[in-house]
Length: 273
Ligand code: SF4
Ligand code: SF4
Image 1: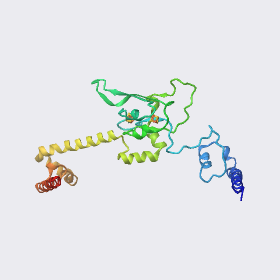
Image 2: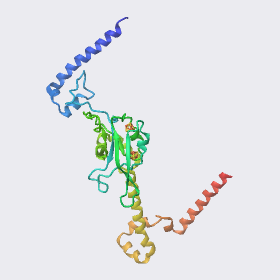
Image 3: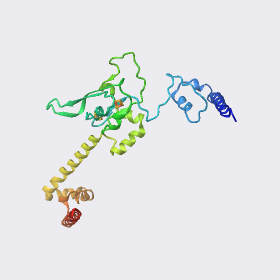
Image 4: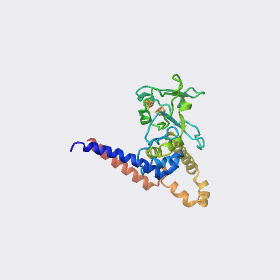
């Protein structure tokens, strides 16, 4: 029948109209109280009707994957070893992939040796040119540049105010984890650590060299250290020493490893024909 769709549409509008008043009665005067909690309830899935957001007193919460202009991650001030340090290594990949070419990086140099160091001396983004595509954040191999949720950047200055320098771009890691907890968690799983990739690598290297340096005297002077080590912690020291490195294996294990390696080599040779 002609006009059914029109009637349905009008009924829907009427339902929204009525729901708005029903919702008002449900919330009473709380709707005029601009507390964050209250606004959260009003925006919840149970809320019905049409609501006017009283911007700027009230703001619609942005989804976690919302992206505005980029920012750079730096370590938090309370980080035990790298407080305030940049995650950016000034590799320049973001500047290369940026479609409108609005990123400008100056690589840092060691003042003593003059050699390049993996941190930016200067970092600029012209956010008037930035089109919020997020490529820089997608391509960064160090998770050092992220898209911000802060969209209130209007100003009366059209010259330099919107060229964000390193100081303005830098935000602590805890800020990123606060605005995008799910993404930060996914990135942590991919990296295998909450720490910066390089920092984690350094820590592993340090731990490995500490282990090898602690095992070295034992190899050089076994007779001198054997007695105290056994006396202090025999159970803990035994597994660490046994089989930790190829040169600390017993003869049978070494022979077994050699046999397997020869087998692999023979298989590879057979494949090559
Ligand atoms: S933000 Fe990432 S991609 Fe850009 S220079 Fe720094 S480390 Fe490289
Ligand atoms: S979001 Fe896109 S346009 Fe903006 S700086 Fe990053 S790559 Fe360039």
